[in-house]
Image (cartoon, rainbow, N blue to C red; front, side, top):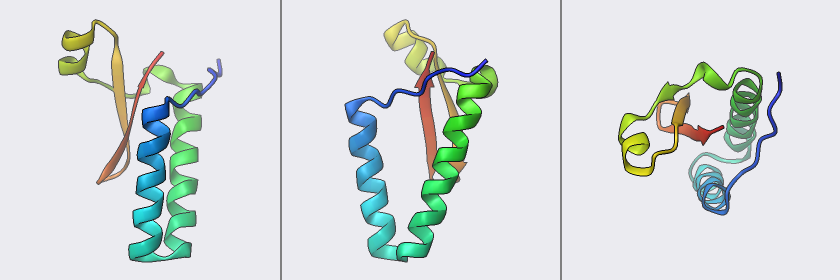
Length: 81
């Protein structure tokens, strides 16, 4: 089962900021690597949506089941189904 990935405006803004920072600090090669890692992680989520860790505090605060999965140690994707 492959779910459709839909990025929220907040997520897109955050992603843009991460990409800009990565490019400025580490260059084009590292930016390409990060984009590949994020795309790969998003595809894994689409294929296996239960893979991520439940985020209890967000679930409690919003009533929506949020999960997260790390891309690299400093970045994780936060999602709901």
